[in-house]
Image (cartoon, rainbow, N blue to C red):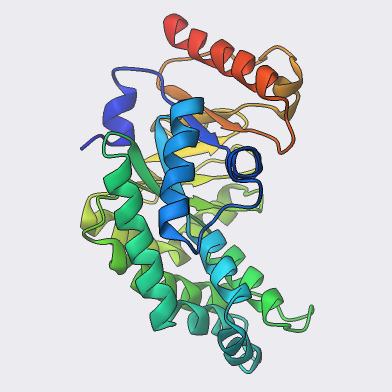
Length: 285
């Protein structure tokens, strides 16, 4: 089974986030997260068209789609907004959601067995904040360190559902920029999630809005940011202007790979042209 770090040693990888672009183009609507058969068909077609090396299942998007269709779960979460982490805990404890999300992962893995399979999710702090907002929590309730720690435990329990799903990679998406002290404290709080990834042999990484320095002993296996950071492979985020035919300013360095967020509504001809440019960088690696 291909894994990100191993594969990037032999070829420069391309990791595309294309859901908001490819779903309207290929399905006429949003990603069909609640219909496994349609989701598999769309994903297979999108990967054939765009050629991402990584198949990504965004767990928070699946959970949000489920929540929109399950008023009872939304009501249960709304009753638990007194503490910042409790709506997320209630959401991830839903048996129906857990069964659907696990089955969807198995179906996607079976449909694209050669792709690097990644589970992507917000950081525990961010996912707790998102769930709190969806549950109607007061805007002044802070997801502090205690809440983030509790959220990490709930997420870790949820991730154990994917033990046999053929997962290769776990990606945490952090919305906050970190200085050195931030990285140490928050990565320590996220360790329950990291421990699950380590236990199952998944490469784990973090995506940040700006490059950061990681403390020794807490470094992710890889990091994604606008510029290289960390000692593992570095995912370089393609600037948004690139999709409008701007040139890439970041050179294709060793031990790096490209991460592209295809914008919704982009012209298909332009997207294919831009993807060809990214693939040319493999020849310069």
